[in-house]
Every structure is written in structure tokens, then in C-alpha cells.
Length: 145
Image 1 (cartoon, rainbow, N blue to C red):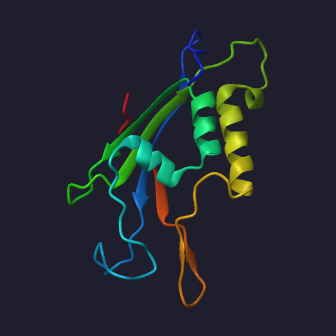
Image 2 (image 1 turned 90 degrees about the vertical axis):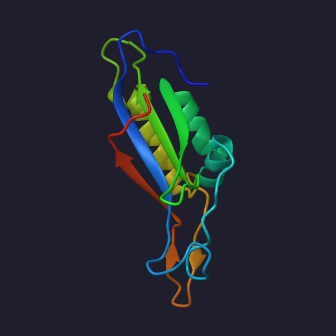
Image 3 (image 1 turned 135 degrees about the vertical axis):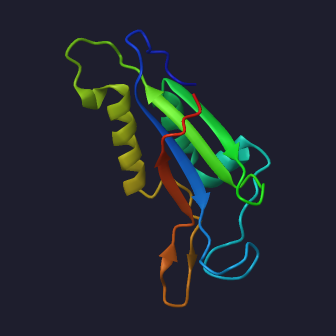
């Protein structure tokens, strides 16, 4: 559950679009360094496919407003995931920004990334041992709220 610290408004709104990587020139179902696209039945399935439980807990704890949505790709399939979140403040006078919700989100995210615990591995190793992450996350301005 998100926090409710919105007494002083919310700040730092961000929206992220998650796209499943496809190799140039391949079809959606062809063999290659990327797996076929996963078509999501619902938001929960998409979140579980991309993020670890620990990462989802960071979103839930640190965000004040949080909304997820499936987005249809060019073929009309729900293969994209979008999230918009913003952060309130704890309202403590002179709080160190690192101890407020946006700062905590960033530090906890960085800790999980460093421990390979933010996003689930969706990569595939090719013959030359190049690993492709499988998910591209892009910051966009088309917010959900």
C-alpha cells in the first residue's frame, strides 16, 4: 500500500514505459537473442514478469500515488507496462532529502539494482556471450494521473 503523506502536496512525478526488447529484423515469434513477446493477461502478471517482489514493495512503500496500466503494442497486444508514481513528503522540518520518500525510493532501488534484485532476469545469452536485458524502461511524459 502506498504511503499517504500528501499534506504538503506530491512531487517528482515520473512515468515509465516498459517495453520487451526485440532484435531488429526478427518476427515476434522467431528464434534469436530475445524471447518472443509475453502478452500479459493483466497488470499483476506484467508486474510479476518484470519486477521482483522486493522491487514492487519499494514502489508500494515509497510512492504516495501509484498507478499501473497495460498498454497495447502496435499489434494490439498487451505487451507493454506503464507506471506513474509521485512522492509526498514526510513533512518533517529540515528533513534530509535522502530520508524523504523520493530519496528512499532511489536509495532502495539502487541497493536492489546493485544486488541484481530489482528486475527479474529476462535476458538470453547469445553465442558471443552478450547478454541482452530483455526489458527497456523509458521515462515518458504521458502520465496515467
